[in-house]
Length: 245
Image (cartoon, rainbow, N blue to C red; front, side, top):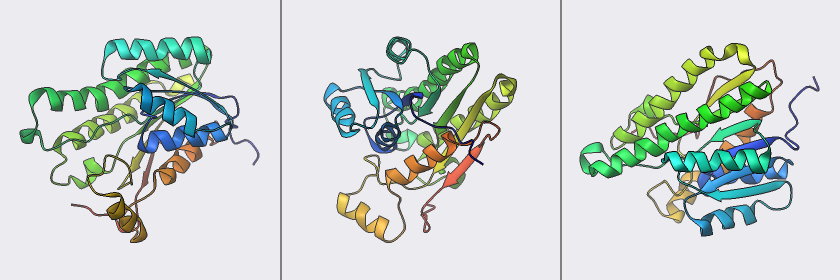
């Protein structure tokens, strides 16, 4: 067909780019020539992720916390100053959580502010810019957690369910503005969020019970590069033997 979107020189903001799926996505997008901006709460982790991304594209970073209004302002000031605009948003930033009754008040609220409020705030800021420039692509990384409702994931599943509802509703609200909204729903992925050892993760991958972060990054790239007429609304990806509880 020949009309897939070329990522070379696309201006992309990746949230949560210092670990897990976000980090793998930054590296993959850079390798395809995109101009990527990402951020993290800690300078050392940010610098390490930028260094790992290699020479394929331009990767820049800013220290910021997506749960804070000041952090959102800092991130999008960098979008304007360093990228000169935004063509694509990939929202990956998220924290794991314990059951709500096992968390302190401030801790569970921080997870909600990071996972849900941060995603909404970044999407809003990106959509306003995309609308002004004539279009763009927004991709939010959710989870299968709202579907499987595993014990121990009450707070985490609630934030991801919120992302799903937000994204699918927003898609209808801006359908006439040449902005696509995509949700990726991964199953179990080998990231620092998993509370098991590296050896246990490796065995789970070997047993087809867990995916690599790169598997999800490849899925993200697939969605971003579809022709402009294509809008991937939801894409669920999980290991062949996904644990459901």
